[in-house]
Image (tube, protein in one colour):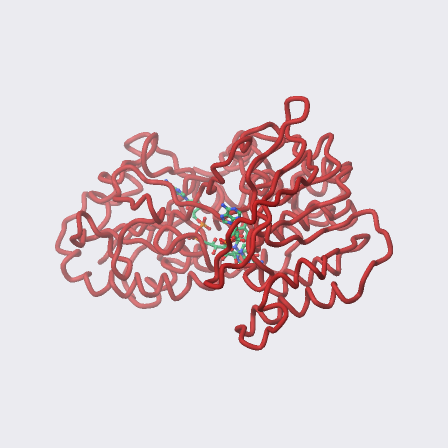
Length: 448
Ligand SMILES: Cc1cc2nc3c(=O)[nH]c(=O)nc-3n(C[C@H](O)[C@H](O)[C@H](O)COP(=O)(O)OP(=O)(O)OC[C@H]3O[C@@H](n4cnc5c(N)ncnc54)[C@H](O)[C@@H]3O)c2cc1C
Ligand SMILES: NC(=O)c1ccc[n+]([C@@H]2O[C@H](COP(=O)([O-])OP(=O)(O)OC[C@H]3O[C@@H](n4cnc5c(N)ncnc54)[C@H](OP(=O)(O)O)[C@@H]3O)[C@@H](O)[C@H]2O)c1
């Protein structure tokens, strides 16, 4: 009987476990996560006001509740936890589904000024990630600049424009709700370095900005027209054409009623420096760019400053190396062939990857399903070689003997109950516990 460890309980980890139990009637799967809570970015990334997408947690739950799957939370793999080499001794195979935990950097002066944050930090805060140490994002800010025009940029822009009535029914932590409700940020500039036809956001998410209560969306028709594909979108793929048409609608509708919040979508501006004002960020300096005819842009030598006391850098995520696993720093991924980990160019038997650590940090939740399937196909092809290895017994017993106390499913359910109770006490629905201490206290209240 094959015993597999899946490291990471986000979409790719859950889909890997699901494929394994569906395709092999005997396999047993332990899904380990460094956090006591499952679901990865579905819990700690997907915006709280996207309840429908959040509810995908219920689909992932059925995987983790499968009789041949065990959830082992609070177990980091790597330094301070279970070394990768030890995991290989305990299981026939290990599938790393650890995602891309950090953010890309801009590499421009002023990037680290107080008031400049990665979107990752902001998302972690409003998602109650227990590692989130920062707060005070919106304190003293009137104008915000969001750098990047992907879906994460749209998420953080939308969260800055939402009011108490819309945020209160979400599971966002109370402190973030209170801070966002008191926010004085009235202007959010979301800025792309290339043209509107090259923006990475999807049309559904873009349109949603136009439907926000009390929010005006502004675009400058002359700026959009710098993009030849905006002027003549006939050659664009359907998704980009739809984006362009939404923007054209806003451009043609002209000035809207003044509203408490204003979102300005800007294009062809690349950030060159964050400028300080009294020791913190006060503005972002951009260079106007122009299309180079090959999908890129060139600088024009014309500069513009946008006032901002809050800057959110939303320029993509990045995988982090896991000690004991090979890593390609250029792509931020683990080198692999169809999910099989490559060590110095050769396949490492029994080690696999799926999800963002395999492909890089792009793709929606559903993209991880075929990705996990490919990896599981590789693993099951290798299974006859792997099951010949004798295991030392139940890995959970071995981990316990080494002093590790995983949060099992009952512990996670206790966290869920504590979050429902917290919400009820605040007159809200479920409200997330925001720190390690309260999560572990809840988990240990019933777990063995
Ligand atoms: C801010 C944000 C919002 C998003 N919103 C949407 C959306 O609305 N709709 C949509 O379809 N897609 C959305 N996506 C994309 C989607 O979240 C990803 O496609 C998906 O989560 C990637 O899955 P993954 O399993 O590879 O990684 P993750 O979801 O990041 O899961 C990785 C898991 O591995 C665990 N882990 C990491 N390191 C270790 C370790 N050393 N030991 C043990 N465990 C470890 C982590 O704790 C985590 O639980 C969003 C992405 C982001 C960043
Ligand atoms: N609702 C949803 O479905 C949802 C929500 C959130 C996230 N997601 C998914 O999660 C994935 C990650 O999203 P993401 O927004 O983090 O990444 P992304 O889609 O890759 O967007 C990154 C953005 O940053 C810009 N950028 C990169 N480097 C830059 C630099 N040095 N200066 C200025 N701009 C720079 C990019 O511009 P260039 O194009 O010019 O490089 C792009 O606009 C995506 O696949 C996304 O669709 C989905």
